[in-house]
Length: 525
Image 1: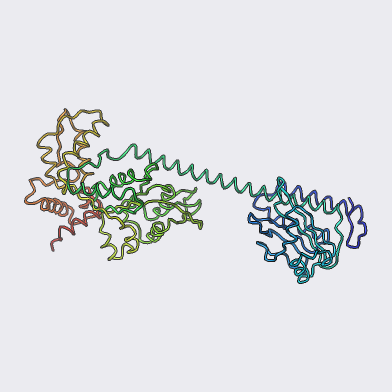
Image 2: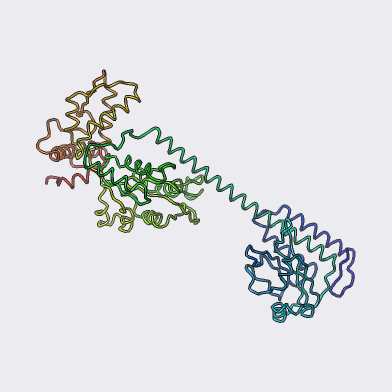
């Protein structure tokens, strides 16, 4: 190898050996540099070449897919401006057409060595004062992916063939390291995507197992004209992606209706993801819905996917959505508007395609007027409201539902029930059912446990939701009024807490408060 200085004088053997060591060190460095450090190390390598060989500026270029050139890194001596990173701002059509054609461009003396067609290059040389330039195309897998360029601004300089050959090797070492780092990044991204999909699949399997072991087997069959209208409305909205708001008292079957809507939709191949907004502490509901990053808060020992992320491409059922904390409602509104959110502890935005079915036993319009629920969120949820009637308004279905529950528990318990005692069926049909279908199911389950033969006897007086001792006078509303009033008196008119009326009746406090207001019950002075 023969190196020359700017005047063309041979350098010493010691300098040539030092240059060979520099090239070997650079090759070893880029063979092991971490992927996220490659571009920075290229800048460092360019600086070393400048210093050792006396270049005023060196630049590593990459050709983008559209043919544009991008300066990844540039190093320059003091007093010389490096090439700005990013897409080229100066046209040099002649120079880079030569490089893209695989030709090394050697310009020992500028502007004299430029051909007549290099108009942009001549203007650039005059503007910045460059005296000599070398541009070497770089190949990977036979394809030219970029170039490495060197320039002298103080004097002209020769570009010996052996120097060009060594610089081409260095440039290709840079290019190989860059290609490897990008392949590693793509592989890491693919692994992350596989991990994400696997986590979602595991989460879905949990929901499917839960669905297989819980919930009622009662179908949406009905003899009640009012409930048949509800089923028809559900059938019409199911094939769409519209947000559905299910309204009604606790235990009326809103979750079952949500399952039916999802099952009749185009998203039914994926699991329905369920969240009870009232069952989670306010401090945890955000991470449950939207996920969290490791270390987002004390106790967050690992990354957790949120229910919305799990439900991507499917449906999420937000039960008791009226209990969602006010400070979290804007985040839910954003998901409903554009499907975007961030995990707790992260600034990375996640995009999902999720259909929302929400349910509540609260009067959301009243909650809006009281400032307890956002008006804009209410309108977003209230796209297609369905009012699910209480069981006392669909008494035609009580016998059918009771027998459906008998069949369910017969299979689970291995018992055979041939009939329901007449007086028991009459009691079931006369009872006001403040707990609705859920209460009926619990009553039947208890009776099945106590059954001694093939005839089922139901004792309503021993259920948590106690019925009046005698027959309820007047209308069904009168019976319900008497039933709730007795519980309030026994609890000294305390609705919530241990021993409160809600606990005695087996109802949620919000549901009981709604019934008290509707019935016009007032505590005596």
